[in-house]
Amino acid sequence: MNPIAQILVDHDVVKTQFQNPFTWVSGIRSPIYCDCRELISISEAREAIVDALVKKIQAENFPVDFVSGTATAGIPWAAFVAQRLGKPMLYVRPEPKGHGAGKQVEGRGEMGKNILVVEDALSTAGSSVRSAEALRKELDATVEHILAIFSWDTPAAPEKAKNANLKLWPLTEFGEIADALEARGKISAEERAELERFHDDPPAWWQG
Image 1: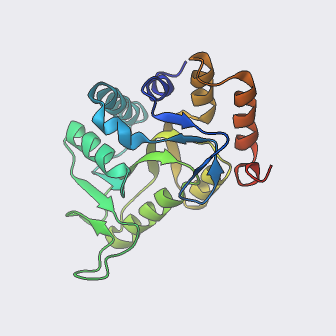
Image 2: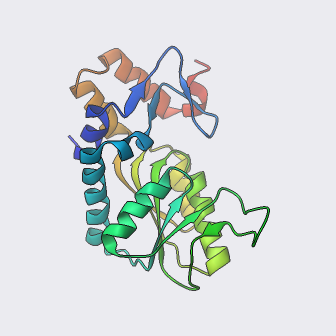
């Protein structure tokens, strides 16, 4: 069992609702939801996640001059990672400010640096791609990698990432989370099959 998936499931960060499904930011109706925001309040789990993120950076030898978080859920994880690595941190707003300097990238950046984007979750990867593009536009940054806690492993995410010349690096994915839920007895075999049906075609699932 993937240890990150196990953490998410054991701490009830992953939730399922088959009759009254969740709504993702993208508008997709889903029988499963993972709220990584809750992890920042669970110190033991938080430390294990940060350890895993840093180990992934070191194992893959990512070039990192700055760590950037995607607002809002990616910001604390970017801060934890930046602190651990001793690197400066930035974060990216969903849209440029309508006042002041009109920036979308917050923090004191430098031009032409390697910036690693940290996310909590990847669904369609839209927010991650927009963050990378903002960093490239405002800071002429080299942004190649998106590091995340987990991915729903939808077809849209790798396609969007590829089109934006980005690589996605989740610590765990949908299948591993489903495995952990079933192994812990939190879903039945029938519910696991329903999750798989959702995963095969998320936009069509709620229509039946």
